[in-house]
Length: 408
Ligand SMILES: C[S@@+](CC[C@H](N)C(=O)[O-])C[C@H]1O[C@@H](n2cnc3c(N)ncnc32)[C@H](O)[C@@H]1O
Image (spheres, helix red, strand yellow):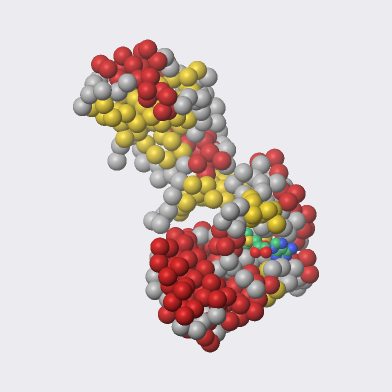
Protein backbone atom coordinates (compact mmCIF):
# COMPACT_ATOMS: atom_id res chain seq x y z
CA UNK A 1 0.00 0.00 0.00
CA UNK A 2 1.29 3.48 -0.84
CA UNK A 3 0.99 6.45 1.55
CA UNK A 4 -1.43 8.07 -0.94
CA UNK A 5 -3.70 5.02 -0.97
CA UNK A 6 -3.60 4.84 2.83
CA UNK A 7 -4.66 8.51 2.98
CA UNK A 8 -7.60 7.73 0.67
CA UNK A 9 -8.69 4.82 2.88
CA UNK A 10 -8.65 6.95 6.03
CA UNK A 11 -11.19 9.53 4.86
CA UNK A 12 -13.89 10.43 2.37
CA UNK A 13 -14.77 7.97 -0.37
CA UNK A 14 -12.27 5.29 0.75
CA UNK A 15 -13.40 5.30 4.40
CA UNK A 16 -17.06 5.13 3.29
CA UNK A 17 -16.29 2.22 0.96
CA UNK A 18 -14.49 0.31 3.73
CA UNK A 19 -17.32 0.93 6.20
CA UNK A 20 -19.90 -0.34 3.68
CA UNK A 21 -18.16 -3.65 2.90
CA UNK A 22 -19.94 -6.83 4.04
CA UNK A 23 -18.15 -9.25 6.45
CA UNK A 24 -15.14 -10.68 4.61
CA UNK A 25 -15.79 -13.82 2.61
CA UNK A 26 -12.85 -15.12 0.57
CA UNK A 27 -15.09 -16.97 -1.88
CA UNK A 28 -17.07 -13.80 -2.69
CA UNK A 29 -14.10 -11.40 -2.88
CA UNK A 30 -13.61 -11.56 -6.69
CA UNK A 31 -17.29 -10.96 -7.48
CA UNK A 32 -17.45 -8.14 -4.95
CA UNK A 33 -14.35 -6.48 -6.45
CA UNK A 34 -15.90 -6.71 -9.95
CA UNK A 35 -19.15 -5.20 -8.73
CA UNK A 36 -17.41 -2.31 -6.93
CA UNK A 37 -15.31 -1.51 -9.99
CA UNK A 38 -18.45 -1.59 -12.13
CA UNK A 39 -20.01 0.90 -9.66
CA UNK A 40 -17.18 3.31 -10.50
CA UNK A 41 -14.63 2.80 -7.67
CA UNK A 42 -11.10 2.68 -9.05
CA UNK A 43 -9.27 -0.65 -9.02
CA UNK A 44 -6.50 0.40 -6.58
CA UNK A 45 -8.97 1.65 -3.98
CA UNK A 46 -11.13 -1.48 -4.29
CA UNK A 47 -8.08 -3.73 -3.89
CA UNK A 48 -6.85 -1.76 -0.86
CA UNK A 49 -10.28 -1.79 0.81
CA UNK A 50 -10.71 -5.53 0.27
CA UNK A 51 -7.21 -6.16 1.67
CA UNK A 52 -8.19 -4.21 4.80
CA UNK A 53 -11.41 -6.16 5.08
CA UNK A 54 -9.44 -9.44 4.88
CA UNK A 55 -6.87 -8.24 7.43
CA UNK A 56 -9.59 -7.03 9.82
CA UNK A 57 -11.19 -10.47 9.75
CA UNK A 58 -7.81 -12.08 10.44
CA UNK A 59 -7.04 -9.53 13.19
CA UNK A 60 -10.12 -10.45 15.24
CA UNK A 61 -8.07 -13.17 16.91
CA UNK A 62 -5.64 -10.57 18.32
CA UNK A 63 -7.93 -7.56 18.73
CA UNK A 64 -11.48 -8.86 19.02
CA UNK A 65 -14.21 -6.49 17.76
CA UNK A 66 -11.79 -3.53 17.84
CA UNK A 67 -10.14 -4.98 14.70
CA UNK A 68 -13.04 -3.61 12.66
CA UNK A 69 -12.18 -0.03 13.50
CA UNK A 70 -8.45 -0.44 12.83
CA UNK A 71 -6.21 -0.49 9.77
CA UNK A 72 -3.39 -2.98 9.16
CA UNK A 73 -0.47 -3.93 6.99
CA UNK A 74 0.25 -7.62 6.41
CA UNK A 75 3.56 -7.52 8.28
CA UNK A 76 2.23 -5.11 10.90
CA UNK A 77 -0.61 -7.44 11.86
CA UNK A 78 1.69 -10.44 11.95
CA UNK A 79 4.11 -8.68 14.31
CA UNK A 80 1.51 -6.91 16.46
CA UNK A 81 1.30 -7.82 20.14
CA UNK A 82 -2.03 -9.47 21.01
CA UNK A 83 -4.19 -7.18 23.13
CA UNK A 84 -4.13 -9.32 26.30
CA UNK A 85 -0.31 -9.16 26.39
CA UNK A 86 -0.09 -5.50 25.33
CA UNK A 87 -2.30 -4.66 28.34
CA UNK A 88 0.23 -6.36 30.64
CA UNK A 89 3.07 -4.34 29.07
CA UNK A 90 1.08 -1.17 29.77
CA UNK A 91 0.29 -2.20 33.35
CA UNK A 92 3.96 -2.92 34.02
CA UNK A 93 5.09 0.50 32.83
CA UNK A 94 2.27 2.24 34.66
CA UNK A 95 3.14 0.43 37.90
CA UNK A 96 6.80 1.38 37.39
CA UNK A 97 5.89 5.06 37.66
CA UNK A 98 5.79 5.76 33.92
CA UNK A 99 3.48 8.48 32.63
CA UNK A 100 4.95 9.05 29.13
CA UNK A 101 6.07 6.20 26.83
CA UNK A 102 8.26 6.56 23.77
CA UNK A 103 7.37 3.60 21.52
CA UNK A 104 10.35 3.37 19.17
CA UNK A 105 9.21 1.17 16.26
CA UNK A 106 5.48 1.09 17.00
CA UNK A 107 4.31 -1.00 14.01
CA UNK A 108 0.54 -0.70 13.53
CA UNK A 109 0.35 0.44 17.17
CA UNK A 110 -0.97 -2.46 19.21
CA UNK A 111 1.26 -1.85 22.23
CA UNK A 112 0.85 1.91 21.76
CA UNK A 113 -2.96 1.56 21.93
CA UNK A 114 -2.69 -0.41 25.17
CA UNK A 115 -0.37 2.25 26.65
CA UNK A 116 -2.80 5.00 25.64
CA UNK A 117 -5.76 3.03 26.94
CA UNK A 118 -4.01 2.69 30.32
CA UNK A 119 -3.82 6.50 30.46
CA UNK A 120 -0.17 6.85 29.49
CA UNK A 121 0.94 9.66 27.18
CA UNK A 122 2.35 8.02 24.03
CA UNK A 123 4.88 9.26 21.50
CA UNK A 124 5.12 6.52 18.89
CA UNK A 125 7.39 6.41 15.85
CA UNK A 126 7.96 3.98 13.03
CA UNK A 127 10.60 4.20 10.31
CA UNK A 128 8.13 3.02 7.70
CA UNK A 129 5.83 5.78 6.42
CA UNK A 130 2.75 3.62 5.74
CA UNK A 131 3.10 1.71 9.03
CA UNK A 132 3.42 4.99 10.97
CA UNK A 133 0.31 6.28 9.15
CA UNK A 134 -1.61 3.15 10.11
CA UNK A 135 -0.52 3.53 13.77
CA UNK A 136 -1.59 7.19 13.70
CA UNK A 137 -5.03 6.06 12.50
CA UNK A 138 -5.24 3.30 15.11
CA UNK A 139 -4.47 5.83 17.87
CA UNK A 140 -7.01 8.42 16.70
CA UNK A 141 -9.34 7.86 19.66
CA UNK A 142 -6.65 8.90 22.17
CA UNK A 143 -5.87 12.60 22.49
CA UNK A 144 -2.75 11.91 24.54
CA UNK A 145 -1.21 9.54 21.94
CA UNK A 146 0.22 10.21 18.53
CA UNK A 147 2.36 8.36 15.98
CA UNK A 148 4.56 9.72 13.23
CA UNK A 149 7.22 8.54 10.80
CA UNK A 150 10.71 8.79 12.29
CA UNK A 151 13.67 6.50 12.90
CA UNK A 152 14.20 5.37 16.50
CA UNK A 153 17.82 6.49 16.14
CA UNK A 154 16.67 10.10 15.69
CA UNK A 155 14.35 10.32 18.70
CA UNK A 156 15.63 12.07 21.82
CA UNK A 157 14.18 10.43 24.90
CA UNK A 158 14.41 12.66 28.02
CA UNK A 159 17.10 11.48 30.45
CA UNK A 160 15.93 10.23 33.88
CA UNK A 161 17.28 13.45 35.43
CA UNK A 162 14.93 15.49 33.20
CA UNK A 163 11.85 13.25 33.36
CA UNK A 164 11.77 10.35 35.82
CA UNK A 165 8.37 9.31 34.45
CA UNK A 166 9.46 8.89 30.82
CA UNK A 167 9.96 5.30 29.61
CA UNK A 168 10.92 3.58 26.40
CA UNK A 169 9.18 0.67 24.72
CA UNK A 170 10.98 -1.20 21.94
CA UNK A 171 9.61 -4.08 19.93
CA UNK A 172 12.28 -4.45 17.26
CA UNK A 173 11.31 -6.00 13.93
CA UNK A 174 12.43 -9.60 13.64
CA UNK A 175 11.97 -9.76 9.86
CA UNK A 176 14.41 -9.83 6.99
CA UNK A 177 13.41 -6.89 4.77
CA UNK A 178 12.98 -7.77 1.09
CA UNK A 179 12.63 -11.53 1.67
CA UNK A 180 8.93 -12.40 1.39
CA UNK A 181 6.98 -15.65 1.37
CA UNK A 182 4.04 -16.39 -0.96
CA UNK A 183 1.64 -14.53 1.36
CA UNK A 184 3.71 -11.35 1.14
CA UNK A 185 5.02 -11.78 4.70
CA UNK A 186 8.69 -11.05 5.24
CA UNK A 187 10.81 -13.86 6.58
CA UNK A 188 11.32 -14.12 10.33
CA UNK A 189 14.79 -13.89 11.84
CA UNK A 190 15.90 -15.17 15.24
CA UNK A 191 19.27 -13.42 15.18
CA UNK A 192 19.89 -10.59 17.60
CA UNK A 193 22.26 -8.94 15.11
CA UNK A 194 19.38 -8.64 12.60
CA UNK A 195 16.99 -6.73 14.86
CA UNK A 196 15.67 -3.38 13.64
CA UNK A 197 16.25 -1.07 15.47
CA UNK A 198 19.57 -2.72 16.29
CA UNK A 199 20.37 -4.66 19.47
CA UNK A 200 23.09 -2.06 20.22
CA UNK A 201 20.58 0.78 20.04
CA UNK A 202 18.07 -1.20 22.10
CA UNK A 203 20.60 -1.70 24.90
CA UNK A 204 21.90 1.86 24.79
CA UNK A 205 18.47 3.53 24.89
CA UNK A 206 16.97 1.10 27.41
CA UNK A 207 19.84 1.20 29.88
CA UNK A 208 19.84 5.02 29.74
CA UNK A 209 16.10 5.38 30.43
CA UNK A 210 14.30 5.59 33.77
CA UNK A 211 12.31 2.50 32.75
CA UNK A 212 12.22 0.44 29.59
CA UNK A 213 10.60 -2.64 28.14
CA UNK A 214 11.84 -4.56 25.12
CA UNK A 215 9.91 -7.32 23.36
CA UNK A 216 12.14 -10.09 21.96
CA UNK A 217 11.70 -13.55 20.52
CA UNK A 218 10.92 -16.36 23.01
CA UNK A 219 14.12 -18.02 21.77
CA UNK A 220 16.19 -15.26 23.42
CA UNK A 221 19.17 -16.97 25.10
CA UNK A 222 19.57 -16.87 28.89
CA UNK A 223 23.25 -16.03 28.38
CA UNK A 224 22.31 -12.75 26.64
CA UNK A 225 20.22 -11.30 29.47
CA UNK A 226 21.84 -7.93 30.29
CA UNK A 227 22.93 -7.52 33.89
CA UNK A 228 20.28 -6.08 36.21
CA UNK A 229 17.37 -6.60 33.79
CA UNK A 230 14.36 -8.89 34.19
CA UNK A 231 13.73 -11.32 31.35
CA UNK A 232 10.11 -12.40 31.28
CA UNK A 233 8.86 -15.20 29.02
CA UNK A 234 5.13 -14.92 28.36
CA UNK A 235 2.70 -17.52 27.06
CA UNK A 236 -0.87 -17.08 25.96
CA UNK A 237 -3.09 -20.18 26.06
CA UNK A 238 0.01 -22.38 26.31
CA UNK A 239 1.97 -20.85 23.41
CA UNK A 240 5.13 -18.90 24.31
CA UNK A 241 4.87 -15.60 22.45
CA UNK A 242 7.70 -13.44 23.65
CA UNK A 243 10.53 -12.71 26.01
CA UNK A 244 10.22 -9.18 27.38
CA UNK A 245 13.26 -7.52 28.92
CA UNK A 246 12.52 -4.97 31.62
CA UNK A 247 15.12 -2.36 32.58
CA UNK A 248 15.76 -0.03 35.53
CA UNK A 249 12.52 1.04 37.30
CA UNK A 250 10.58 -1.63 35.36
CA UNK A 251 12.95 -4.47 36.40
CA UNK A 252 11.25 -5.33 39.70
CA UNK A 253 12.80 -8.79 40.05
CA UNK A 254 16.02 -8.92 38.04
CA UNK A 255 16.71 -12.37 36.59
CA UNK A 256 14.35 -14.75 34.81
CA UNK A 257 10.60 -15.02 35.19
CA UNK A 258 7.57 -16.36 33.35
CA UNK A 259 4.06 -15.02 32.88
CA UNK A 260 1.31 -17.47 32.04
CA UNK A 261 -1.67 -15.70 30.47
CA UNK A 262 -5.14 -16.74 29.34
CA UNK A 263 -8.36 -14.77 28.95
CA UNK A 264 -9.17 -15.61 32.58
CA UNK A 265 -5.86 -15.07 34.38
CA UNK A 266 -2.19 -14.00 34.36
CA UNK A 267 0.25 -15.67 36.78
CA UNK A 268 3.87 -14.70 37.26
CA UNK A 269 6.52 -17.26 38.25
CA UNK A 270 9.77 -15.74 39.51
CA UNK A 271 13.32 -17.06 39.71
CA UNK A 272 13.22 -16.90 43.49
CA UNK A 273 10.21 -19.31 43.40
CA UNK A 274 12.68 -21.87 42.02
CA UNK A 275 15.46 -21.16 44.55
CA UNK A 276 16.45 -24.08 46.72
CA UNK A 277 14.29 -26.56 44.77
CA UNK A 278 15.25 -30.16 45.28
CA UNK A 279 17.70 -30.95 42.44
CA UNK A 280 16.94 -34.69 42.60
CA UNK A 281 15.45 -36.26 39.49
CA UNK A 282 12.74 -38.91 39.66
CA UNK A 283 13.18 -42.71 39.57
CA UNK A 284 10.85 -45.02 37.69
CA UNK A 285 10.58 -47.36 40.67
CA UNK A 286 9.59 -44.42 42.85
CA UNK A 287 7.01 -42.75 40.63
CA UNK A 288 4.41 -40.84 42.66
CA UNK A 289 0.68 -40.55 42.10
CA UNK A 290 0.65 -37.20 40.26
CA UNK A 291 2.44 -35.58 37.35
CA UNK A 292 2.62 -31.83 36.91
CA UNK A 293 3.58 -30.35 33.55
CA UNK A 294 4.83 -26.75 33.70
CA UNK A 295 3.56 -24.20 31.18
CA UNK A 296 6.02 -23.74 28.32
CA UNK A 297 6.86 -20.17 29.39
CA UNK A 298 8.05 -21.55 32.74
CA UNK A 299 10.19 -24.14 30.95
CA UNK A 300 11.64 -21.52 28.53
CA UNK A 301 12.50 -19.33 31.50
CA UNK A 302 14.36 -22.32 32.98
CA UNK A 303 12.15 -22.30 36.08
CA UNK A 304 11.06 -25.94 36.34
CA UNK A 305 12.54 -25.75 39.84
CA UNK A 306 9.61 -23.52 40.82
CA UNK A 307 7.25 -26.40 40.03
CA UNK A 308 9.43 -28.90 41.92
CA UNK A 309 9.30 -26.62 44.93
CA UNK A 310 5.60 -25.86 44.61
CA UNK A 311 4.51 -29.52 44.58
CA UNK A 312 7.43 -30.78 46.64
CA UNK A 313 8.29 -33.35 43.99
CA UNK A 314 11.06 -34.48 41.64
CA UNK A 315 11.56 -33.58 37.97
CA UNK A 316 11.37 -36.57 35.61
CA UNK A 317 14.66 -35.54 34.03
CA UNK A 318 16.73 -32.33 34.10
CA UNK A 319 15.01 -29.43 32.31
CA UNK A 320 12.05 -31.51 31.12
CA UNK A 321 9.49 -29.44 33.06
CA UNK A 322 7.44 -32.40 34.29
CA UNK A 323 7.42 -33.19 37.97
CA UNK A 324 6.17 -36.23 39.87
CA UNK A 325 4.76 -35.75 43.34
CA UNK A 326 2.57 -37.62 45.84
CA UNK A 327 0.79 -34.35 46.60
CA UNK A 328 -2.51 -33.43 44.98
CA UNK A 329 -2.36 -29.62 44.68
CA UNK A 330 -3.61 -26.97 42.26
CA UNK A 331 -0.92 -25.14 40.31
CA UNK A 332 -2.60 -22.72 37.89
CA UNK A 333 0.40 -22.65 35.53
CA UNK A 334 0.81 -26.44 35.29
CA UNK A 335 -1.32 -29.28 33.94
CA UNK A 336 -1.98 -32.12 36.35
CA UNK A 337 -2.38 -35.84 35.63
CA UNK A 338 -2.75 -38.89 37.83
CA UNK A 339 -0.28 -41.66 36.98
CA UNK A 340 -1.76 -45.14 36.84
CA UNK A 341 1.32 -47.02 35.64
CA UNK A 342 4.98 -46.45 34.73
CA UNK A 343 7.20 -48.80 32.72
CA UNK A 344 10.56 -48.61 30.92
CA UNK A 345 10.18 -47.85 27.20
CA UNK A 346 9.92 -51.19 25.44
CA UNK A 347 7.65 -51.78 22.43
CA UNK A 348 6.86 -55.39 23.34
CA UNK A 349 5.93 -54.57 26.94
CA UNK A 350 3.91 -51.57 25.82
CA UNK A 351 2.03 -53.62 23.20
CA UNK A 352 1.12 -56.16 25.89
CA UNK A 353 -0.10 -53.36 28.14
CA UNK A 354 -2.29 -51.93 25.34
CA UNK A 355 -3.66 -55.41 24.54
CA UNK A 356 -4.25 -56.43 28.19
CA UNK A 357 -6.14 -53.19 28.90
CA UNK A 358 -8.12 -53.47 25.60
CA UNK A 359 -7.09 -49.93 24.59
CA UNK A 360 -8.69 -48.90 21.28
CA UNK A 361 -8.28 -45.11 21.50
CA UNK A 362 -4.74 -44.18 22.42
CA UNK A 363 -3.39 -40.64 22.87
CA UNK A 364 0.40 -40.56 22.70
CA UNK A 365 2.17 -37.55 24.25
CA UNK A 366 5.91 -37.18 24.20
CA UNK A 367 8.32 -34.98 26.09
CA UNK A 368 12.09 -35.21 25.84
CA UNK A 369 11.91 -38.52 23.95
CA UNK A 370 12.83 -39.16 20.33
CA UNK A 371 9.85 -41.22 19.16
CA UNK A 372 7.44 -40.76 16.29
CA UNK A 373 3.96 -41.04 17.91
CA UNK A 374 2.26 -42.20 14.68
CA UNK A 375 4.83 -44.90 14.02
CA UNK A 376 4.56 -45.99 17.65
CA UNK A 377 0.75 -46.17 17.35
CA UNK A 378 1.08 -48.48 14.34
CA UNK A 379 3.52 -50.67 16.27
CA UNK A 380 1.16 -50.88 19.26
CA UNK A 381 -1.92 -51.85 17.19
CA UNK A 382 -4.55 -50.45 19.62
CA UNK A 383 -7.80 -52.45 19.58
CA UNK A 384 -10.66 -52.53 22.11
CA UNK A 385 -13.29 -50.40 23.87
CA UNK A 386 -11.05 -48.55 26.30
CA UNK A 387 -9.22 -45.24 26.05
CA UNK A 388 -5.79 -44.28 27.38
CA UNK A 389 -3.22 -41.48 27.32
CA UNK A 390 0.44 -42.36 27.55
CA UNK A 391 3.46 -40.11 27.91
CA UNK A 392 6.73 -41.22 26.34
CA UNK A 393 9.48 -39.37 28.16
CA UNK A 394 12.74 -39.71 30.07
CA UNK A 395 12.85 -40.62 33.72
CA UNK A 396 16.22 -40.32 35.41
CA UNK A 397 18.02 -40.40 32.03
CA UNK A 398 16.26 -43.45 30.53
CA UNK A 399 13.27 -43.60 28.17
CA UNK A 400 10.05 -44.54 29.95
CA UNK A 401 6.29 -44.63 29.40
CA UNK A 402 3.81 -43.26 31.92
CA UNK A 403 0.11 -44.03 31.76
CA UNK A 404 -1.89 -40.89 32.55
CA UNK A 405 -5.35 -40.13 33.80
CA UNK A 406 -6.31 -36.46 33.25
CA UNK A 407 -7.58 -34.69 36.39
CA UNK A 408 -9.96 -31.74 36.59
C1 LIG B 1 7.58 -5.75 15.66
S1 LIG B 1 7.03 -4.28 14.94
C2 LIG B 1 6.27 -3.46 16.29
C3 LIG B 1 4.93 -4.03 16.66
C4 LIG B 1 4.20 -3.24 17.71
N1 LIG B 1 4.80 -3.36 19.01
C5 LIG B 1 2.74 -3.67 17.82
O1 LIG B 1 2.39 -4.36 18.78
O2 LIG B 1 1.97 -3.37 16.90
C6 LIG B 1 8.54 -3.43 14.70
C7 LIG B 1 8.44 -2.13 13.90
O3 LIG B 1 9.71 -1.47 13.99
C8 LIG B 1 9.87 -0.68 12.83
N2 LIG B 1 11.29 -0.33 12.71
C9 LIG B 1 12.33 -1.08 12.30
N3 LIG B 1 13.48 -0.40 12.39
C10 LIG B 1 13.16 0.81 12.88
C11 LIG B 1 13.92 1.97 13.23
N4 LIG B 1 15.24 2.00 13.08
N5 LIG B 1 13.26 3.03 13.72
C12 LIG B 1 11.91 3.03 13.88
N6 LIG B 1 11.15 1.97 13.55
C13 LIG B 1 11.77 0.88 13.08
C14 LIG B 1 9.35 -1.58 11.71
O4 LIG B 1 8.95 -0.78 10.60
C15 LIG B 1 8.18 -2.30 12.41
O5 LIG B 1 6.96 -1.67 12.08
